Length: 470
Ligand SMILES: [Zn+2]
Image (cartoon, rainbow, N blue to C red):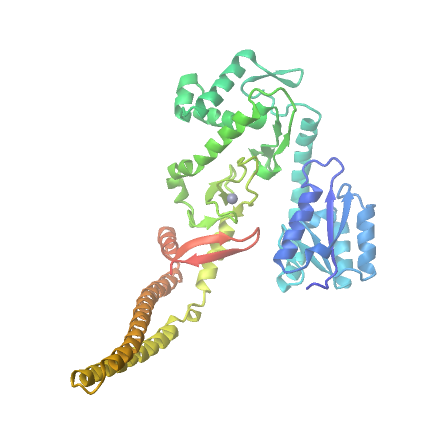
């Protein structure tokens, strides 16, 4: 696929708020291209800084011209709304693209018109309805963002340790001292619950204070968003925005990042405590992000169930784990389907075992022959029919052969035993797959899956591999 002419189209709004940056969009498209086996180095990037409702975009015009001149084979965007937020314009663009046999890929929506499924998906009206909902969401978020960018504190109440004076955060002399003590005590090993008791601050608040970059002078906004139903919910950590040096810090960066490291180390322990909650998730403890971290079941306030990396949205070495959340219903359905469709007959260990047994018989026979030879020359030597030197020379050769055969037999026997165990676990895998087909209860289903799956390992944003307990 090296000779494909690829165009990456990226766009950010004029206010640059609520959008993934141009660099992120390019990176994400390139990753997807590499994932699909394209050469992403030769891809041409076409960009616009304009609203998605604005049809007179320079980049977009250039892109359409190239498509009409048949200079492009593949067009990739992070999501279709990059091309246009206006449904009518988007349909026109897609028509043009289709009539010129250009493949459209929308990474986030997982649309790839090179596949029949992608072709069908792009026609589905549901998608367009979704786009309109996105527009609505965007508007709400933009309003909040604009306020924040103008320097206004959007939350209404100042974070603990600060006062809101003329819409600016100013350290409160008394409370900022308590914040300093919280950080210092925590570094010295005082537990969160002891901190809560000692300073009479709720445990969740202590945790939030210790994890907040507000205290190093960074403005954080967008942690909560208004959803489609008008409810305030927690935002996806990736959409949270940070502006450094926005106000006076209370904590120095070294202390802050030390605390973040310590907090992250307790993430796994913390999740262990919420293990009962985890048991409500079919694949708890089995899913790993592509960085190898555990992914945990979680739920938003409006009951949107998903799995997220334990380190997603948490500062680790001043970085986030970028693995996206996975919709729980989707991954659970996919994994079950993968297992039900798993062609176990392809795992043929019987054949290998038979070959090894034939090999083993041959070595045993050879060993018998060598042992017989040794017996014969010993007889000859004892009966004075063979000189001592001659006997010792022949014996050394035979001994060497016997040793070699014996070690080969030991290794083969070990392999055959291992395969015997493997055969047993494949049989139990077969058994469990049969049981899964009978649509068991949630608890049983969970038990079966945990019996046969070792881990579900993500290898990139899009694909995972299931490792069985074989
Ligand atoms: Zn991770």
